[in-house]
Length: 362
Image (cartoon, rainbow, N blue to C red):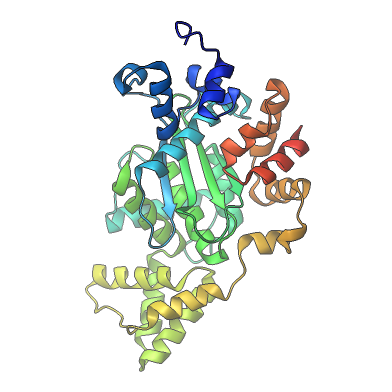
């Protein structure tokens, strides 16, 4: 840049990005998106190999709770990693000691007995026995114990690849869990349990990590004692319709998706050598309609979203999720004097919402 007579401002103008973005790149706090990286290379006359150090031992580790029918692509991973690089700025403002490693599982796997043992251990730690129904407060408490920072966001209910993102920063050993509030209550509880599974198994990557988190969430919310009781209750029904109704009644009672009840009951059946429960081909449509009948978490928290303001959003999410995120972000903004762009970068919420949040926090 110096040889070409280019300042950070000149580079920012040429690439149509903010001067702050260029500063973040040069200070190794964020990474250019692929199209901007290509433009930067052309501007400076440098090849990809000359621009980029390919191996970064501190690259943020990301995992997604995907929307149904979506596939994780490179640009999804790159975007989440970019968010993780911005999160590094917030680490000094965390309210706990990042040098102290929270407890994690040594050898997480999807073995049936192992999952039952781990689920029982976690239930004991949050003071919930195997007969009780886990609620949101129990899960939130465990996130706090594991020093995971919950980031409540409004990402909408459609046209989004993911509804939850787990970002682990290896250099600070910190975990950040993004939860989209624009989803129905049953799915939201499962996603919280799923993200808790990721917090407990930072050594896992890719599909192994997702498989374990799914299996852990199902077992935690509906362990063997519940699955066995559900299996017997449903198996005693004499018609397909009555089995479906029994499934829905159990799901409603436990405040979880019928899908979780169905899968756990049939996993118990497989493990115990009993025949699988048959709910008929139309069960998938029934499960979808069941979930549609309940409010989104955002509606339950805020009522009419059209009338919510930044102050109310921060206050209600802090109360509901016991999260220090907005205090952390506010402290950083006041100390650094950064603008709303950083709020947009770390929350991935719409720019107008980011500006409102910035104004409230500063």
